[in-house]
Image (cartoon, rainbow, N blue to C red; front, side, top):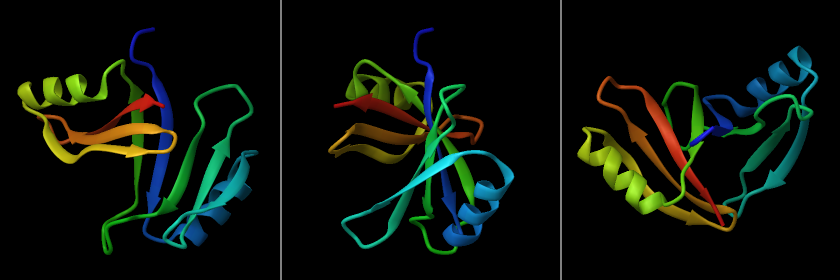
Amino acid sequence: MANPFVHVELNSSDFKKSRAFYEQLFNWKLQDISMPDGSTYSLIDVGGEGTGGGMMQHPVPGAPSMWLAYIAVDDIHVSTEKAKSLGANVIRDVTVIPQGSFSILEDPTGAVFALWKPA
């Protein structure tokens, strides 16, 4: 399938509470990674039967918890600009991290999603 969902991320208003809830609810393997800013990111391994993901403290103080789906693209810059030309609002422009590049967008109906290009 072209442009599959490749990662799902929980941005939580209470990271520790969310982590404990999902760890008890599902049989996910969670691996904590220390981030450069001192926060923790938990990688979610679902055991190969679906798309894994991660969870972290929401980067926007006071914002509600939300799940964010990442969609793979061949060219992060072209895809971000195309989405924008089709009426998407760019919440976070293309950002490079060691693992790849991402952008966060809001579609014309208000649904938020992310684009992802691995390194």
